[in-house]
Structure formats: C-alpha cells, structure tokens
Image (tube, rainbow, N blue to C red):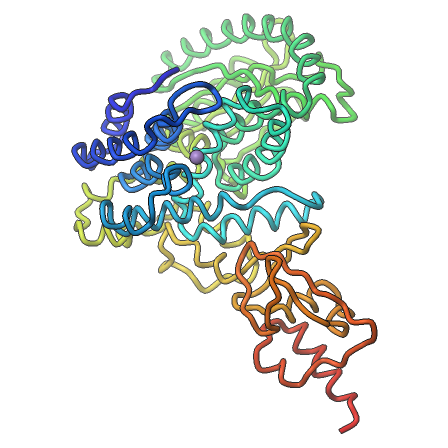
Length: 495
Ligand code: MN
C-alpha cells in the first residue's frame, strides 16, 4: 500500500491534538527533496520508507518530534545532510532523536548467540538509545523494512530476519508491545524457516476454518448474554499468531498435533472498566462450563512483568470443543497492544495544562502508575532502585549508566560507565589482565586508560609472559573485579 503525506497527516491528527501541520509538511518536503532520485530495492521512491516509518509511529500516537525524526532519519546516511544543517532547520530535540536512531541502528547481530549475549545486545540497544522514543522509532523502521524484505537480496534477507526475531521482537515484548512483537515474528518467520512455514500453512488451514466458524457462533451468543445483563463490551475473535502457533506445536506434549491446540481462535471481550471484566467472567461461566483444572488465569490481579493484564478462561462450547476467552478493559487492551507506546496514545499532556516550554524540554511527561514498562526496563538492570518518581519517562538513565562492548568474536560485555580496556580485560577473564601487551579499540591502538563507549570492539593482545598489573591502574579502573585483582597482585609484589 502506497502511503501519502496526506495519509500521515490525517492519522497523526486523529491521534493527537497537538500536531503542527505546517511544520510537519515542511519537514516532509525537506526529506522528499533530499531523497529525490533515490530508489528502494522495492523499486519505489526512497521517501516511502521514512514516510511509512512515520505513519507507523503516528498509529501508535507518538508526538510531533518523533514523526519529524522518522521523516528525516535516513538523510545523514543517504543524502549526506549534516547534523548541523538539520539542527539549523529543525532544532535540537529532533536532531537528538535522529542521532540516537542512527547510533542504535549500528547495533548488529554478530558472533555468539547464546541467551546472555542476546540479552546484553538488547540492553545495549536500549542503553544507547537514552530516550524511549529512539527505541520506538527504530522499531517502526524495522517493522517497515521487514514488511518489504522480499525485495532485498537473498543473502541479506536471512540475517535481517534473524536479527528481527532475536533482537527486535524480544525488545518489543520487553516494552509490552504485543501487537508489534507478533507482527515482527510473523514477518520474519518464513525467511528463517521457509519449509516449516509452508508445512504450518498447510496443516493449519482446515483447523482455522473450523475454529473460525465455531467461534463466531460463541461470539454471537456471548454478545446476547452481555446485552441481557447490561454489560457494555466489544466481543471479537482473534486468530492465533503463526509463529506463536508454531512454537506451541513444537512443545513435547503437543508434538506437532494441531488438534491439541485450543486457542487457534481466541474470543476477546473488551469492557469499559475492570469491574465489568469480573461480571463478564461470571456470565461466561453461567452459560458455558469452565474446563476443570485448565484454570482461570487472572492477570488483572497479577499482571505479567511487562504490564500485561487480562483474565483468561477456557470453556467447553456446546459441541464439547475447548475455547479460550480473554477478558480485559479498553485501557488494558490498549496497553497489551501498544505497551510503551500506549503512553503516547492516551496522554495528551498539553490538554492537561503543561506549558509549551516544559513540553519542548520533555519534562512534562512523568511516569504514571500505569507505566510499569519503565519500571520493568529499570528493573532490567538490577542495580537501579533510587530513580523513583523523578525519573522522566523518556529517559533511560537507568540503563545509560552501563556500557556494552564487544569482544572481537562478538560477545557482549556489560561494564559500568567510563570503564577502560583494563576493566574489560579482567571482565573477560582474570587471567587476561595479567597478560596485557597492547590494546586495540575498534582496530586502533589505544591507551589503557581510555574510557570505552557502547558498541566499541576491544581487542587485547596478550604478552608471551605474565606481566604484573600496575599499581597506577587503580587510579582509573572502574569495576570491583579489576580493583580487587590489581590490589591482590600489587600486595604479592616484593617492594
Ligand atoms: Mn531507515
């Protein structure tokens, strides 16, 4: 689908009251002019990519600065537009976002792929972003790129798809963005496991058909019952996501038998408020018997760590089939679908009286109680506890006190801010610190006290014989481990 600037404008304005139309148009025309003549691998004009990225962000309700940054994000790389020029034309906030987007874009999947590595890679991404909007813009950019992946050369497709599955989709999940996570996984799935994807399509087709027919009957009866009891609610059917279905089929107790899967089509009841969720549950159980022992999961009373809330129950329909029903309020629904971005969708700070000055400074948005995703992100780094209520929701300070660097093999190491190559060496192995000959950062010889930055690749060239650590290193090392090792070695030294 070809999107136009007018489409973007209409969507943005329906989502937010504070969109500056003239300015957004000016930004768009600047991007269009400077991308002129550039063609995507799909054969379309390049501008369709920044435009689509902005359109996705608008659908999440993101603010003016995010939309502008999305429209401009590829200009430095593609059109050689300098940061200074962008700053002169569009101001500091937008430029900071663009720089962040391009910085995190350089985080690439490489080297080892064990769980800890992937976790560190995702943390590095967030730490480098420093502003939640940067992460959201990158995710929108990736969603558009993976939607048009078939135009990319085969050799690149698989790498991009794996990166999407292993870095971006889990990141979206961390941020509670259920819909985006599902979209990214389902789009990457056929590129990573083409044969399995085809197999799944074939076996699932008749089951989906049956399930759909069955569920639509239940939905109709359920609507009637809710009306009868005076509960205002929407009832909808939701086909299970392809990749999520595939993973479930691989479980040992399922053993690829699709007839054992009960939630091919789940029924979703969306109510006005929390109390109505429990009333709806009562009505459902009056009408259909709950499956014994399959259990009712109350994620309203006990939300999932990423903030997800719903009640899940499994019932027998009149034919004896098991059907899953999910019940949640409108607000829980928005949070489950949009996660971190839901904040933008239901906060219109300006209408709550925040001044323009405060809005520009980004300090008008404070974490509300609903923002469990920020706490979740903060909790991602165990060390953080003091940030409390003063933490601004955009800022990812909690994570930016850490840096993440690569070994030459691509392993990621988590170090405190301003760590040095010595900290890195002791972090890799206590022995390595005793054999430091020279150090290279990103391929260049560097001094031992040079502060490292996230994304740096550190290479320690080992000496042939053991070298005692130097007492002076204690003046600049940051990690406990390095300090301890150096002190121990210095004590042992005959003076
Ligand atoms: Mn891009």
